Length: 237
Image: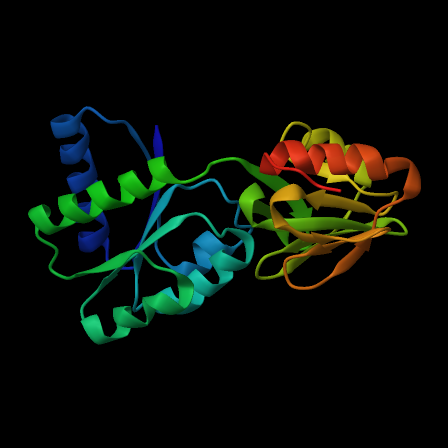
């Protein structure tokens, strides 16, 4: 099942998109779960990263499509965004929020079906191995491939991703258990390391993508090196 959100303050346009989704289901044998919203403020209020694709009107009365997309991206880096607009020049700014594409109103079915096909293909190609993090303001879906390392600071957890950080309450032990078997390894009591982002090793530390140097404790060093060797399939000192 593909989970789809439709955000449009024009009822005629909203109904057209939902009708097109029903037609596509019948023609291609797929199943959609569709939720509609009449403004960007509705979908961003208590947003949860539960959608695969969101069709998003650009011009809306309370919260426009671009601001809506920015709010969504704070909690959901993976959902496919497709803008729908009367004026293509506004939708072109969608690259700022990693939108897949845009459709110009009035939307013909053929163009819609083409973009929907691309969107579904992107969903299916995506690495859906993700973790849900209870952050301030809601739940964030974070792709494991984007996490560089996790740090424990007193009673707080900081997840260092490629493009941002997430702070939350919890324990490193609990997150380590959740990420077991996912190529993460505990380098010491404070760090859980994504092995794919280790760029260098010294006697007592490892260097991560971005240049952060993390301590590797003496009792864990041999096992850490073994895990890294297995991950890269090579030889390490």
